Length: 275
Image 1 (cartoon, one colour):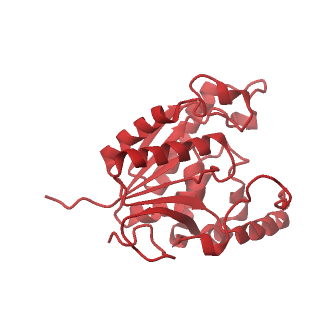
Image 2 (tube, rainbow, N blue to C red):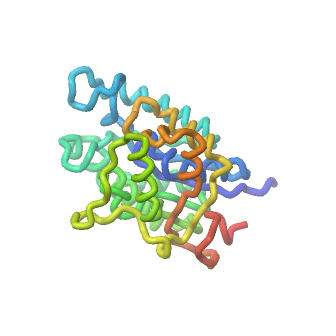
Image 3 (cartoon, rainbow, N blue to C red):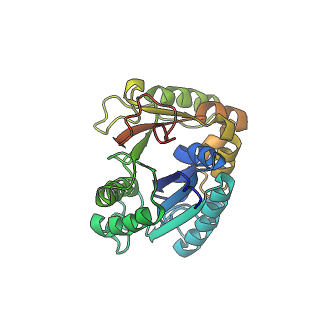
């Protein structure tokens, strides 16, 4: 019998989220023979429509946006060589406080246990060695990201399959570099407000457990993000150009929150201790 390959599962909220924070690891590990599974929880209906039309504006057709974003998601997965794409199909909840939060079928209004049961079925089917999702704040407070975190951690507890679980993050100092470069490019960039009651984005270097070099896969990550061409605000990093994009976004960082391997940290491989 052939030996089972290692498996990585990334749980994301919307079409395009997979490219930004995990595009590099999805491409790298696929190239290394790892089975990669992307779970996208929502249909992206609160994204921009053709021509950049916003939700709620005349001409924004949620059903058409859903279809368009599914096509873009499939193209992104092709660029990253994702082995399996699974879509849970919940309604995009929009930003915190939007009316969509409470609409029937929205991800945010779905009971955590109900969605976690569906994800647990996928975990049992694919038996991932490593699972990646967001932190408790969904990285930046988006309700669907928070919900993806909640259902993932509930499903992990239910199944006890994954040897390692990670939350995506960014070194806090990287925001200074991004801000400086975006301003050089003429892109509006709001510097972090130290007096804000909202949790600061990212983490200090010493709190980051895992630094994965994905520079060799920068073109694939760039292409995956470019596949989501309808969402111009979400793909602004493409304005950097391929070379600078890879330079700035060629290391993906994580916090390890579950481990059965005793692999020492900091580590440079999500599969450290498993191979």
